Image 1 (cartoon, rainbow, N blue to C red):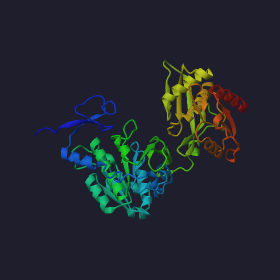
Image 2: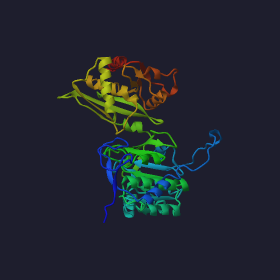
Image 3: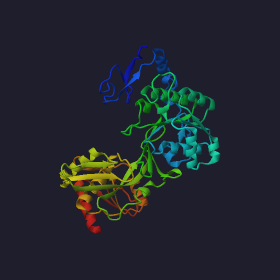
Length: 468
C-alpha cells in the first residue's frame, strides 16, 4: 500500500512546506512545523471554496453614507462581569473564542452563563472533552437551579458534521463548543487538534453562525507560552477573543478582551473562584488592595486603566544585594521596560541599582501592559532601595521617557476619581494630568504634579519626611 503523502504545516500561521525545516517560511517562528497528510485535491478544493463563503455576505458595492448603521442587539448573559468583557453581552450571529490555562474556570463560567441564558432563550452545550455525566456532576457541584438545567440542552459529540446538523435542527440562540481542539471533520484525514482540523472546524461553525444568527462560543486551548493554540487565522475568523488570566492557585480570575468587533478591547471582568463557581467582583480595586500594608517599604499603589475601568493595583518591589550577576525579575509587568526604568533612574536621578537584584510584582495576578505604570514601579524601587515606606494613602501613575520626562496618562480625571472613592488622600501624577479646575469627584486628594524623574524622587522624599 502506497504511503500517504505528507507536508509540514506551521502550528502558528498554517503555512505549508514540502519538507521539515527549523524556521517557518511564513511567519518566521522556529520549531512550529508539524507533519500532516495532504488531503485529496477534490476535498481540499471544495473545502477552500466553502470555508469563508458566508463570513461576509455577497453584495453589490454601496455608498457608505447610504448604509444604515444600527446598534447590534445584545443578549445579556446574566453575569455582569462577563457582559462587561464582551462589551455589553452576546451578539446574535457573533462568534466568541475564549482561552486560558487548564483548570482556570473556562467551562465553569460558560456552564454558569448558559444556565442563566436558559431561563430566557434556548441554549446548547456541546461537550467534546467531558461526558454528559461529568457535565451534570459539575452542574450539581455549582448548585445550579434545577429549573434552568431543565431548559439547557447538552450534546456530547466531537464529529463536526453531527454538530452542524444538530445546530440546524435545534436552532439554539446560544451554543458553546467545548472545545474547538477536540472536533474533527470527516472531510479531512488529519487528527483532531491539528492545524487543518482546527481551521476547518472553526470556519464551518462561523459560517453556520452567520447564516442562522446563532451565537457560538468556542473554547480554545493555550500553549505553554499562554497563547491560543492553533493557527493564527483562528483569531482572525472569530468576532471576539477573550483570555482568562490569573494564577490557578489564587482565587482571583480575570477575563480580558483582546479583540472585539462589537465593543472595546482590553475590557476586563474580575471574578473570585468559590465553591459555587465564579462570582463577579463589583469593586476589584478594593479586592486587590484588601491586604495592602500600612507601612511597608517597596510598596506603591498604581491607578491603571483597563478598558473603560480604572483599577487600583499594588506594585511591590524588592531591591537586595546581588550575589554575582544582578537579576531583574517581574511578575505581571514587562521585564524589558524594567531595565529601561533602572537606566533612567541612574542617569537622571543619580540612583544606581547596578549591584542590586531587583524584583517587581503586580499583586493579585494582574498583567499590566500600559506605560502609565512606569512611575509607580520606579517609586516602589526607590522605596525598597532606601528602606523607606511611602505614605499609605498615596496613589501614583505616569509614563517615563528615556530623557527622564514624565508623560501624561490617558483618562487622568477618572483615575483620580476612583482613588478618591477608595479614600486615598495624596496623588503623585504628571503635570499634564493636573486638573485645570477643582472637581468634586476628587475632592480631598492633595495632588503633587511633577515633570521629571528627579523632581518626582525629590518630592517623594519630602512627602516621606512629612509623614515621619
